[in-house]
Image (cartoon, rainbow, N blue to C red; front, top):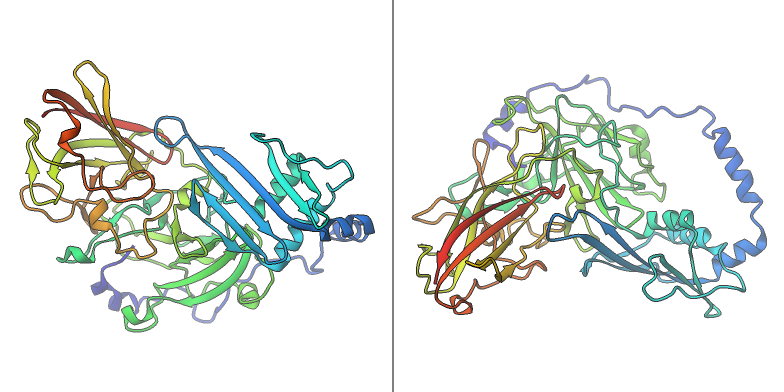
Length: 480
């Protein structure tokens, strides 16, 4: 979230920590090796030569996984397909057709080969087409083996797959959700010029005080330092981050980390091959003294970005343990606009191409911040209740572009005379979403043609759903 620049000068004079303490250290056992680690090391030494040879014989690993999310409407499952080429370290991976490919670290590829190498035998068989369990390995002698051991599949998935509603949160307790102030789909707009409106693209996770931040997933620290330096006119303690490249090919950016709180151990492994395990401390939230307009309390938070190797941001809420949310989105209004977005249209006697706009807000349970829904579908039925037209809206499991500025005022209705329009600043959040502007694959549309409908009366129904599968709806009578 962008904060009011006028306050920044004032913030710089506030002391947020003990100036004599540069680092907060992570406590480790003095010996450096626990009894369990020692036992594990002995067990590793006992791995037979045959097992070692088996792991080095693997050429590729193919995995397909289907995660059921929710079945209220729209998206019922998320399908991932991945293929790892051991020699090149390339992982070709998709999520519902969207490319999340990456280059795996050599140590991680070796680990995957080690995990799966023990299943190679003279009795290997390929996976059956349509099999619910699909993890298949190919050896150098072109032997194909279907892996059915669920424990080994889970171990391999840690390196191959994107987690779905299962990843820990970056605060304690990590197996529980925490309050969310902004979602990736939020519109942000802090000037008079709507060309500067943008998508939030990450999750603001809010706490009552500047508490410890914990790494959500195994990965390597790739950057520790200030960001937005040119925009801020120098290094600002409010724009400091820890960046982690996870073993499954994602980049985590933990924005708004207190620059004095990063443990020395994290600095020591920055830029190295050493893995920072999930659950390790990465620092603390920087102190934000400004009160939030909705909670009336300081907005202590991290902005958590999750990026693919290509730079597209994913929705962290889809990865992490689900929020406790049974509150459906509230659609306050449905309105029609012309396809060129120059005027509002009446709902009687529609005679031109049009777009459907919904004014909608969503509250996760017990949270004060209104946010947009994850997606909105539009259905048009005749007076007998027969569906005549269905538009599945774009599902925000990933952002539409690498740039936060792209498509913000295509997805949202921005400034337009004659009607309300979207706002996303420190005091007002109003979400006017052009529900028919993008299809479910993220392709822009040019509106709904009136020629699709015979003259007569119809009912238009908008259905908005949130991250937990709660859906709200609203109807409006229309005619052609």
